[in-house]
Each structure stands twice: as C-alpha cells, then as structure tokens.
Length: 382
Image (cartoon, rainbow, N blue to C red; front, side, top):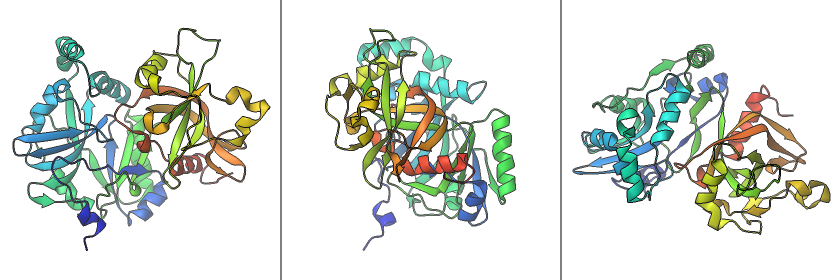
C-alpha cells in the first residue's frame, strides 16, 4: 500500500495543495526543528506553483487557480527556460521597502477571466515594463525525473540552488541553531525594513494538502489575517451609494469544517466595498449559511446592531486580508475558538485588500488565531 506521501507524489500539470506556516515562539521553533532551523528572509509577494514539462508549463495560485499567462510575459519567459520541474515560488517585485514591493506585485496581479479589452489595455499601459516581476524559488517538489516531495527540506534546498535562470531571485537563507540567534535575526530583519522570517525544519518533507505545520513557522513585522467574508452591513452614516459599508469576517476551523466569526470590518475606503460587490454581489442571501458558526447572542435585542443585513455562503465568498491592532479573548458576540463563554475577536481591525490568490479554505485557521493570541499575551491564555 502506498504511503500518503507516495500517493501525493507530484504529477506535472496537476496542482498540489500547498502547505502553510504555523506560529510559534523562538524556543518552540528550535525545539520542534531538532535544534537547528533554516531561516529564510520573507519577501511579500504572491505565491505561485510552477510545473514545467517538455514544451508545456502550468502556473497556479495558492488556491489552485491558473495564472493568466498573458498578463505575465516576463514570468512566462523565465519559466520557459526552466528544466523539467515542479517548484514553489513567490512572485516578487522591486521596491524601496517591503510594503512598496508588495504593492507593486498587487498592481500587476490580474485574476482569471479578464476580458480581451481589459487585457489589451493592461498590456498597452506599459505596466509590464514599469513594474517587472521576478521569481523567488523557495522549494522544489520535482527536478527532472526525481520526485522530492518526501525528501527532507535540507536536501530539497540543494535542488533549489540548481534553479538558476535570468529572473530568478535567490532566497536569503541561513542555518540557525539557537533561539537567541533566531530572535536577533528576526528583529534585525524587521528593523532593516524586511517583512520577516520563515523557519523551516531541515528534516521535514513537503506536506501537501493545505496543511498548516510547525515544520514551517512564520515571524512577521505585523501579522495580517486572511479572513472570509460571511456577512454584510449597511450604515446610513456613510456614502449611500456604497452597496455596504462593513463586512463580518471569519476564520476557518479545519477541525470542525465550520467558519467562525472574528469581527466586523469597515470597507468604505479605496473602493474596497465596490470591489467586493463586483465579485459576490449576486451571491448575497438573506439567510444565515449553515457552515458558519454564529453566536447565539446575535438573537438578543441588545445585539441587534451586530446582526448582518445580508449573508453569503463562505464557500462562494472571497478572502479579505485584514490587519488588526491586536486580538482579544472575552465574552463577546464572536465564535472564533469559542470555549467557556469566551471567543477571539479583533481590536481595531481594517481591510487591506481582497486576496484573489486565496480560496475560503485557505483562510487563517482558528488554531492559528489561538496561537497568535498566545504569543501576543506572552504565552498565557487569559
């Protein structure tokens, strides 16, 4: 009988669900990784999985959707020069700092289904030349005839170094062997304008299937949350021309398969409400979806103002990147990680952008929210 790893061996042209980093303390990382870890400087971009075989190639977003190749001619040119392989990479751009670099990647991104007129306008605008993209390859799952998905990460990094072509940006990686050294590296990276560090267990295989594992652990400047929109609110205090003025967002509990609410986020700035409406406007509904855990407190008259005006099935919804000042755990009207009458919620959250490259089940997990709260509180859950 084949093992799970063997059954998941990559086939060219078939998207391999991507693994994701977890959260931990510096001490926990070193312990979990057997006393040493590969620390990679994190560059904010859009994740891309590339399959190159013979004269054909495929490029997928993190949720398995194909990239619109016509929008990325310089990336297509890079990919055509790769050997037969399956690689995980990041679409990256130049910038004075990590935020500007990421904003440039966002400027270039176009989701699938773009019309011919819009495509021609995009290409004729000169944006490809003004904001060129590169690839930062950080993992190799197959190289020529060799399947690597079950090999240790330390071995896979040797193949990463073989992916050498114009337009490939090398990964800044070093071996760290103490919690103090790791903390110094993370803090110095952030102070110098970097986004953060991802630590990878040298002995770990690649775990396909949208797995969140402490084999990969992420440390960032300010943690963003990828949350699914499950409800909509309309406030008369704002522009009446907007379809809605705020949304209810939720994390995904992969244990129960339910989406659990985390907070209400305003979407009145930068046209975000209209952008969301263009994607899901026809999918809004008056009834609560059954795969979302809603607090019973919403049925009380005192919580009437928190009840959404309309809802959406999260499986038909979009992922919104959200930033929050911090996380709370209290007797609120949320359901994220609810236990003993307390649940997680966000304090002063704001919408950053729609994540076209992610699907609902790639939303931030409830377990990740719990870990972030624990780290925020110094390891003590109150």
